[in-house]
Length: 309
Image (tube, rainbow, N blue to C red; front, side):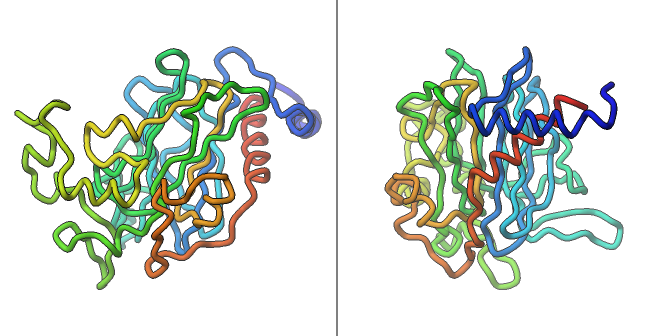
């Protein structure tokens, strides 16, 4: 083990290397890829994370982000999983942690292998998949509770590919949600259910005779999600316009809750492609935006510390 007096200088040296070259030395089994999760909402969000079966785990499965806060997590090679935001969370007199939306049912801050109870906006990732590519999407198949934006960030010299672009849903769908799908709390709309959850029919759930792409088609309800957020998944077989890929290994990702349309446009993309043309401001407020360079540096520091300890 390294002596205490040597640890800080080495970490600083690694950060200096990144700031000069834009790259972190990679050892076998280690990925320089990070997931940077930011909360730009006007309220606390509790991100939840579920790794797929057989996938390496991330450093945490649940934590709190106050407005304007962010956290970067090193993502190991081959990681696959999903993450989402939980809202309106409380701890009862017995110490049980629970949330009105996105609750994972673990009874604690960490989701500990439990997934999100619908409705919840999901970001889904598979790193180093077929052909060494990263696959990712934002899904509204299980409903919606928060605006979310996923942005890939290319490492210097990375061949990311033409389909390596931002995706998500930045429109406030809670305010526009059809009454039969709306979830309320304290007189406010806090989430929007999928038609599958609301009605349970084979047609809406793509089950039984509707369980393949030839017989499962968009419905009026899935089209509500799709028209609002064209790049997000709206039903089970909505692959063609909703799955995105990046060249594996050289791309990190930021996941932002309640992004502003200004921040989307600053990335050089039409805000309407992620629902940014019609964002409502009544139910969520955008907190001051944090510069990505600062988030990336924070992620590098975490990755460097993880390698040393």
